[in-house]
Length: 149
Image (cartoon, rainbow, N blue to C red; front, side, top):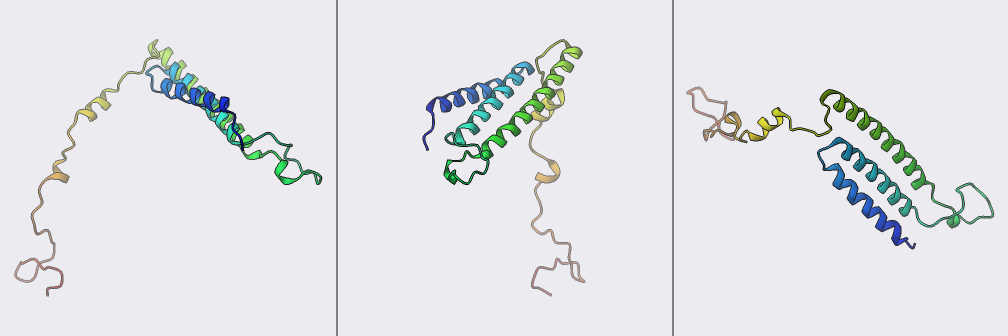
C-alpha cells in the first residue's frame, strides 16, 4: 500500500495546530483547535483507508481485493458527527461566557488554586503508626500474632 505523503504532512500540520490551539486560554481558540483536530483525524482515517477501489457493493465479476474498505468511511462519518456536536457545545459555552462576563478568556478557579497550594501531607493517613496494630488480644491483654494461640 502506498501512502500519499501530502496527506500525511497535512494531517500532521492540522493535528499540531489543533493541539496548540486547544492549549490556549480563550474558548474561541479552543473551538478552532477542536475543529482542526477533527479535520486532521478525518484525514488520518481517510489516509489509513488505503487506495481507492470499487464501491463496496457486491458484484460477482469484481474480485474481493478490488473493493474499497467501507470501515474508514463509516468512522469518518462518525467523527464528523462527534466534531459537530462538540463544536455546537463549545459555541454554546462561548456564547454563555460572553453574555455573562463579556470575555472569552478562561480564568483560574479560586478553589482550584487553594487545592493546588495545599500540601500533600494528610495527618490521618501519613502519621506514624505504632509497630503493633492488631486488634486481637489474649486473656491477659497481650496482642495475639498469627500462628500463636
